[in-house]
Image (cartoon, rainbow, N blue to C red):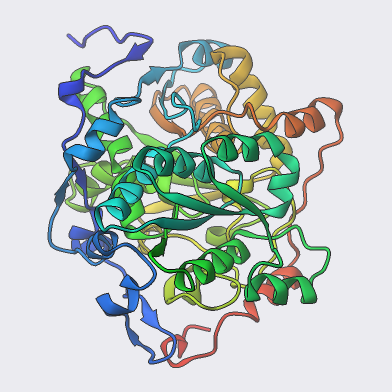
Length: 462
C-alpha cells in the first residue's frame, strides 16, 4: 500500500545530495561544443578560464563523471536553506476539481527568494578558493543578483551586478537587497562600459536586455584584476549546480512511491528547468521512464517555440563564445514585460539539444494568462509566486484541467522557483486590468535573426 502523502515532504539533512548530477555525462545530452568566434574552432580550457573561474570551466567541460561531489564548504552553505520542501498542492487540486496529483518543489524558502542560490554559492565558493578578490554578473528580475550578493558577502568577495534597466526600475527594492549585502548595482545598459555606451548610442530609450547586461559584466571582468564573470543560467556548470533540485525531488517522491507523468518548469536560460529534470531525464535517456518534460517560456521571448537552432553569441556585444542553441538572435530586444528572468534571447545548449531531439516539449504563455494562474495559486496554496515561476503554474493548471476533462489521472510535478514579493507592481497591473500582452511579430523576430552570425559553423543552419 502506498504511503499517505503529507502536505509537505521534508528530507533530512542526511538525505541532502552529496554530489551534483551531471546530465551531460550521458551521451544523449551532450551538445555541440562552444566555439571561439575568432578561430571558429571549439573553445579550449584556456579560452574560458580568462572569463570564468577555473573549477567552473572544468565542470563545464566535464562529459565523463555522472556525479560530481559537492565540496564541504558549499554543503555548509546549503544547510542554511536545503533540503527544500516538496509540496503536494491539495488545495489547488481541490479548486480545479481534478483527478491529477500536483506537486511542486519550492525553492523560495531562502532570503534570495529563489533557486538561484544553489549555483551562486557554488560559484562564489570556487572564486574564493581560486584567490580572486571580485566577481561580476548580470541579473534580470534580480533573483540571481540577490542570490550572488548573499554568496559573495558570505565568501568575502566584491560584486558588481549589471541589472537590466527596466527590471531595476520595476523592482527598486530588489536592488536594495543586493546593496544591503554589499553589491554594487549598475542599471544596464550603462555608461560604465564600451558595450553599454555602444548600445545606448544605438537604442537610447532601451529598457535593456540580459544579453546586454552580460556584455557589460563580461567586459568588466576581463578588464579588472583578480576578477571573473559568473553566470546565473544557460551554461552547463550552472545546470549542474541546480541538479540538487531534481535530486531532492526524486528522493522525496521515491520515499512515497510516486512516479511523475509530467514535469514542468519555466525556461529563460534553462537553469531551474534543467536542474529539476536532470536525474529524471537521465533515466529517460536510458529508456527507464516516459515522462513528459515541458518547458514554458514567455510568448514575448519565445526562443524555443519560435527561435532558430544555430550558433549564436550569448551576449549582445558579441564578446562571448558561440553556443549552439535555440536563439532569437543576440540582438533581439524583448518587450519590457514582467518575466524579467526569462527575457533572454537564447536557451541552454543542453536544453536546446534535448528539445531538438524530441525529449522535451515547449509551450509559450502570454503574461496575462500567467498572472491569472499566479493569482489562483496564491489564493489556494498561500504563496505569491514569482512571474517566472507562474509560467510553470500556468501549464500545470492547464494539464490538471485536461485531466479533469478526460477523466485521466496524471502525476504532475513543477518547479516553484521563487517568490513574487518584489513583483507587486506587476500584480498591481494585473489586478487593475492594465496589463497588456506583447507578442513579437515575424518582422520583430526577423530583426533579431539578422544578428545571428553568418560564419562557417552556421553553414547550412541559417
